[in-house]
Amino acid sequence: MTTSVDVINWSASDDYRRSFGCFPSGVTVVTTVTTDGKPVGLTINSFTSVSLSPPMILWCLKENSKLRDVFRHCSHFAVHVLGHDQQEISRRFCAPVEDRFAGLTWHRGTGDVPLLDGCSAVIECRRGEVVTWGDHDVINGVVERHGYCDKEPLAFLAGSYGAFRRFPEVA
Image 1 (tube, rainbow, N blue to C red):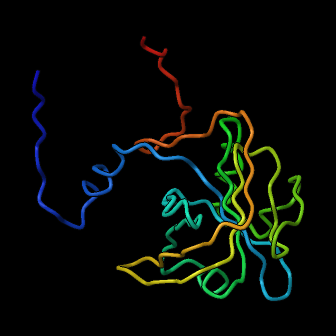
Image 2: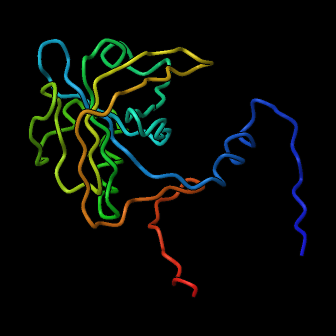
């Protein structure tokens, strides 16, 4: 069986976003602290593992983000893989809210960064190189600590939240 895909030439239209909307991603929140110790964070979906030895990750931040300077110059940050029941946290950390941590349960981790409770995984990193590429900064991190639990992660596909569904093992 073959499937035909209509190829659309690159343009600055919403079609470009729709093409990438066909790729499901996890939902993550990245946190750090300002120079005066205030916890800050934002929702991202452009995050990946880069290397297992040494353990390294990267994530991308829009160049017009209000937190750009904070993340470009922080010593550490944490990436939180949100659980299937944490849609509200995802929305909160991408909304124009003054204190995104108000009412949340969290504690301090490596480099004094805020760590959110109840996530599927948390990856604490020392900030590495920051490279500007296109309209984003690519922020590299060297993993210093990490942890996970047996909680299904939150997923995002074509503008909607969802959850991962495992297929039965085939013998």
